Length: 262
Picture 1 (tube, helix red, strand yellow):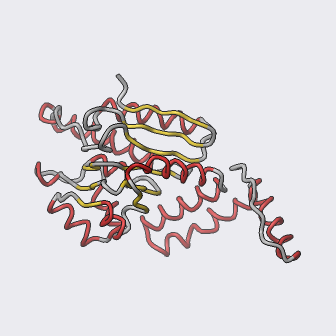
Picture 2 (cartoon, rainbow, N blue to C red):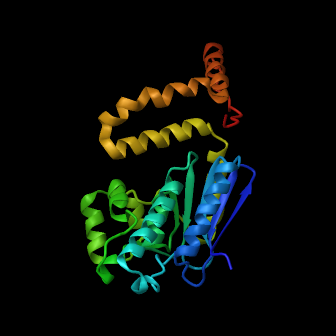
């Protein structure tokens, strides 16, 4: 039975964690995530929604086989996990995570690789790794720190506390908290809305933010025009800028642009 499924409906690809009862992430799920990313990259999807079946988003990694892996296997398997998670993070389209229930460990590390996290009000987040004397193996602590700051990320990692969605929103880890019963509707609606936008410009913003995270403002400034100027060759920009100029000259509101993503 598959642990992760995917579909592409119009402009939105949906990835679904479905490994009951806790949606734990193991070798099979990561393999299927890689296959789903292959399909998304081949598709015409202009946004991705990541969600999970069941009461909880994910309890984290499937730790049952870990005691049987030697150090060489541990490194090989976790490098595979990290590489696949990073592929999701670097998709050139907006990604939205819909999080309900518990989002712990590897589940949190996957969710924070989304561009936008929309959480149900009852969702809780945390790093359980210190409870088994390890670190956040897939880069969770520093990705949370990039959103919430070093001090808060360190506190949450030291305590493994279950942090409510409202607190995660207050510190910038979660973008929006919504009623649990409307979570999927609102996250899907957001994904569909951004899928209608200028996809190439969205990809450029993602690239600039990755550069800024890696090297700061100076590094992002250094690549700005290499990233930005090719947008002038896209169909969307060639339509949008003259349309905006015409509206300005005529004193009319700027009209909605039917972006094609090209």
